[in-house]
Each structure stands twice: as structure tokens, then as C-alpha cells.
Image 1 (spheres, rainbow, N blue to C red):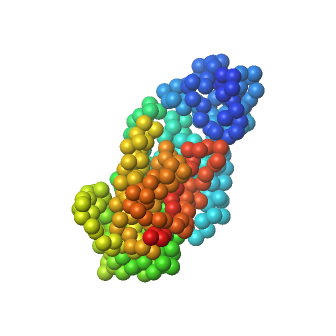
Image 2: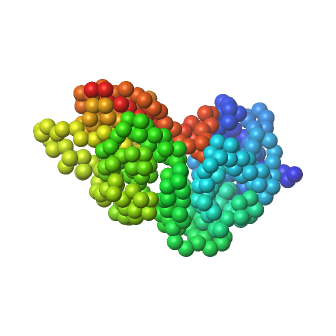
Image 3: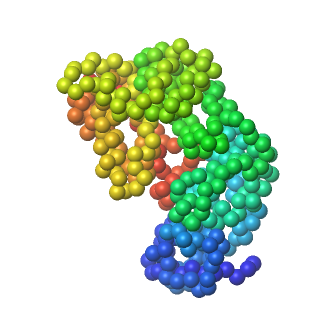
Amino acid sequence: METLPTVLLKPGEADRIVAGHPWVYHSSILRLTHPAGDGAVVQVKDHRQRLLGVGLYNSKSKIQVRMLAPERVNVDRAFFDERIRAALDFRRKHLPEATSFRVVNAESDFLSGLIVDKYEDVLVIQTSARGMDDRKALIVESLQALFSPRAIVERNDAAFRKFEGMTESNGVLAGELSGPVPVRFEGLIFEADLKSGHKTGLYLDQQLNYRMVADLLARSKARDVLDCFCFQGGFSLHAARAGATQVLGIDQSEEAVAVARRLAKANGLAERCTFEATNVFDWFKSALPPNERVLPRCDAVILDPPSFTRNRASVPDALRGYKEIHLRALKLLRTGGTLATFCCSHHVDATTFMDVILSAAYDARRVLRRVAQFGQSPDHPVIPSIPETEYLKGYAFEVVR
């Protein structure tokens, strides 16, 4: 095995790594014993020269080392075969019926800087770390051997690549792909635009929650449902199939709403679903004029907004946004109605999110009973020692009065 450059950590900086967190920040490093190229494999030791493991180095990133293993390993084709196969086995165990899911979820699968999503017979990869990007060819070879996909698409247009000293890179890496890919969730047809659509295509982390919320609405016999930030209508279509007769989905993206309308028709639900392209906050303002009494008219409201905050500095503004949409949603809900709400920001923890909801309920003079709690689907696993792996949280409430 080759001699590796050694990254020595400052006193007190090793505990987090020993506990399983894979990120070594620039501020934690005492020194390098030898120069290391960006993307190279290095070994990491504490200040007493005890081995902590190996990882991928990048001098241009605040995260200068992304740990891969607590022992010496060769980061070769066999390494990726083993890690990706282990990740796939986990999905097959916990999502046995799913045909589209996240195969590799970066830190959750001990491959920091790598995401692989499976949409039926097509794979999408994102490499957000220099070391992973440099080994893209090996990763593609491994994926081809394990899945035999029709195509492998690269979606590396995320802004965070700039912080790793990398440029955007998009396109088909293997096979051929033309047009959106039809995707099935629980028997409903959706479509993923893997070349230019949102994220890598769809919100795979909500896959189980679509069904769980729909089942809850069916039990409560919800008929009039408002789905805010609906995107392609994931919650809308599931709610309609579960028995809702009037579903209104709202999203500011004209393109997403056009797809939602098309999917409602394709799934035989067009008579039950209506979609409107508008800003959700503006829609609420028009539906709830100031100083006018509005009669509650919804049996259920679903709130699934995009992240309102990308950093801790913007959390106060995000909380005000979360409170506003909850306050307005609660004013539209009938007594006995259901509020299903989600937050996908890592910087807003579950306790803070709950506090915002309760503050909105107080201002709306509504009393809530919690009836369900949600998280991200099992293909986005959570490693408790890596808090960043847990970001999606959600609740369902019944309006008691």
C-alpha cells in the first residue's frame, strides 16, 4: 500500500471524527506531514499520531478532508463496488417495493460528496467533492456493473461545487436518454426531467410520506384539500386517489404546474385536481383579505415548501415565513380538519419547527392535536453522529377547535 500524506489534527479535534463524523475542517488541522494534491487520498491522525482513518483531501474547501474509512483502504473500483452494493442492499431491505429511490446518500452511506439517484432504469449522479469528482469514471464503471442502467446522467450544476474549486458539469455519461423518464410511486405515474429538471428529478425523500399523508386524509374523509408548494402534485395526486374530490395544488413554477396537470390526466384524476401557478404567499393574501372574516373552507392543507434558509444567518427570516404560511393555513382549515406540514431545512430543527407551528396556532386561536410525525424516506438514512444527514421533518395535526 502506498505511503500517504498525513493530516495531523489539533488537540481536541479527533473526538468528532472517532464518533463517526466524516468532515475535517481547515480549522481543525495542525499540519500536513507532506504536501497533498487536491482530490488525493490522505491518512488522518490525531496530535499523538494515532490513526483515525483515510479520506479525500481538498485545500480549496473549508471541509479539507472527507473521511472514507477508519482504516487504511484503497479507494479503487473494488472500494466503490463494495460501498455502493452495501447501500443498495440497505434500500432493498427497507424499500423493497420501490423502483425509484436514492441509491447513495453521501455521508449517510459513508461516501461523502457522492449522491446517486435511481429513476427506474436511469441513474443520476452528483459529485460535490473534488475527490469524488476525480473518481467519477470509477463510480460510473461500478454503477454500470451493478445496475446495467439505460443511461447515467451527471447533474453537477449545484452552486456548492464552487466552494470545492469545481465548475458545473452536466450531461449523459453513459447510454442514451431523450425526454422525461416515467416514474412510479405507489402505482401513480410521475415524470422526471433528468437533464434540466429540479434537483436530480423528483423529491425521492417524500416517497413514503405521500402515501402516509394520503392514508391519513382518507381516514379523516377529507374532501376539500389544499396542497401548497405542490411541485408535480405528489401529495395532490395521492390525496385525490385516496378519496379527496376537490384538490387544489399551488406552486409558483409554471413548468411544474403544467406537468402536474398532465400527470393528473394521465392518472385519471383530472376531474378531482386543479393546479394554479402562483406564489403561495400571494395566494394566501388574496384568499384571506385583511380585516375580513373568512369562513374556513378546507378539510386539509398540506404545506411542503422548499427550504427557506441555506445558512444560519437567514434562520430568523425563514421562521417568519414558516409562521406566516401556518397562520394563514390554519385560518382556512375547518374544525376537525388536517394540517400536514414539512420543513426540509437542516438549520431549523424539529423543536424550533414545532414552536413556530404552535405560535401560529396561538395567533389563529386554534388548538391542535398531533396525529402523525414524518421524516425522510429510508433511502435518505440518518446517521445520528452526523446531524447534517437529518433534515426533513414533518407533522400532521387535527384542528380540535
